[in-house]
Image (cartoon, rainbow, N blue to C red; front, side, top):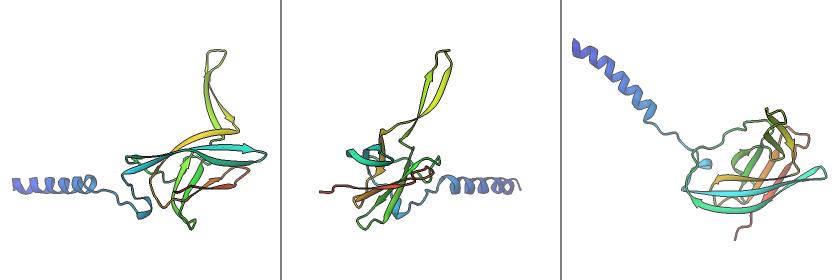
Amino acid sequence: MKYLVLYRMILPTVFIFCSVFGCKPFASDSIKNTDRIVFFVFNFKKFEGAWNVSIIQEQIVSGKLKSLPTAPMYKTDIAIDCLDKNKRVLNTYYTNDPFSKLVEFVNDNGAFERKQIEVDESQVMIRLIYNPRIRYFRFKRQATTDSSEVILQIDKT
């Protein structure tokens, strides 16, 4: 009788522990995490009501991303679609709006103050899972008056 009570308590506890902590999440083919990541530094620039993006630097290194962005955090975020040679979406990443910066400072009265400012040019570093099939990036600004998009081609040699 004593052992029966012990088995009724231990077996469900072991089962729950193994099912919760023993399973790894499945990754779909489109967001498979490889052993290499790529760092891109993009230059975002506004001019005469339009905006443009250029690549300043690209570097491939060994490593893995800890997490993959699944949705934008803010309505003003920019969606970055990684496209293949047929301009089909492989992955989508998100970054904060590069034209809107939050500045924190101490004002003349000695109080801490935050201010949102708009800039015309900004550089943004983005880490992505390395995928040799990426040929284009599509940058989409949503939730702004100029909800436009920019497509940028990557030079592959």
